[in-house]
Length: 487
Image 1 (cartoon, rainbow, N blue to C red):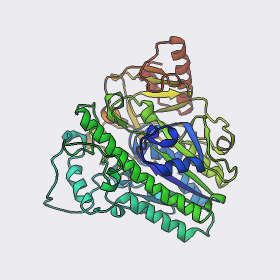
Image 2: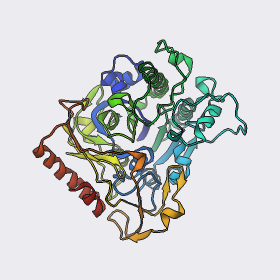
Image 3: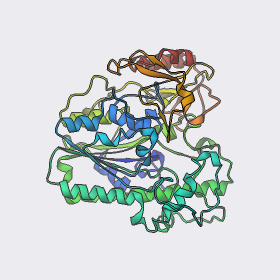
Image 4: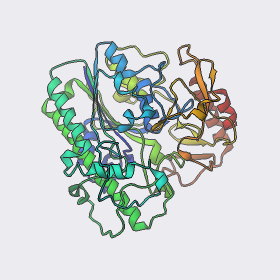
């Protein structure tokens, strides 16, 4: 058996044809839906980028215990388990966060082999000591690392055709892997691109798919903030995302073509997914992190083909999450699941919509703890004045180590049930992403999919709290978190 996972970053479900969008140009995503099973209730888990990828390895939530960080020494890693059981795993990515201080270099080395394509989102790649022709920024300085704006424009100067863009190269390397190894068995290929994550860099042929009159400033890198731009600039930013989405669609088509050409559908699982969505003006916000994790962000596209059942062109209503992907891959290759894995194999869910979760959790460290049962979404607001700690053996932030000052009051905490007997560092933490002004929210997403009308119903809220507490207990959440959430 063989398996391919294609993972995009910040891919919006509501902008794909098979999920009801009628204005984006994404014929290959429509084609994908015809060749796979499409899930309508796929939800995020731990947010954002690297916490989500830790789930992809471990199959368990991590946002209750720590923020951005590496694979920990006690973590079970799906690709490593594959390799240890005779299944070759290969990662091809242009996602630069894997290679920054915040990830500790612990992700890519879990694979049998890996390839990294440089140049995305201000990746510190090409060296221009005195850069020229850098456009004036149109977003606040504190939205980006101080060096990423000029660096991104330096990188773009080396990508003057679509074929030179990082994403195109990732998929070219993927096709090379498939051609080289098409006659081999027992392998897993993870093709992962940073697109359509901001900045929304695409070439004119893709922009031409969305003609519009715009005379404002250059704008393809929105801030993580409330909408403050004029309507025509907001619409332009939305169409810049759409152009990059269409570029993603073209790359996906190359993989589907290869699977058709080699008749790989007979013996190769295909999973296409993302880590989260991206707000483009919905609820008057750009991006993610700062605001509640609305369904535009949290309810994600998910497609799966399993040659064992051969189901395609159908939809599924069961709740699924990224934590289920490692369980599904391990089961495919007949590898026992680690006892700490919370995700469930999706073999029967793909085949006949057999449920694997009644309720699921999602959120980011220190902010809302959210849960959904598929009908209701409950966002429990924290008391920002209560204690908050990170639990880790590898203290890193996004792009940096913990500071000396942060570490000076570190104590060792007893082992959690998933740390394999290892005590962990207990370090005072802060809300990840800078979200503020929390308000507990309850929505019926079946009746109100846009989440425009919060409910006030104590009986439903009490029921959702009990479901949340049960999942927190199963995750061995820190004791102070219950006080922080007042539950």
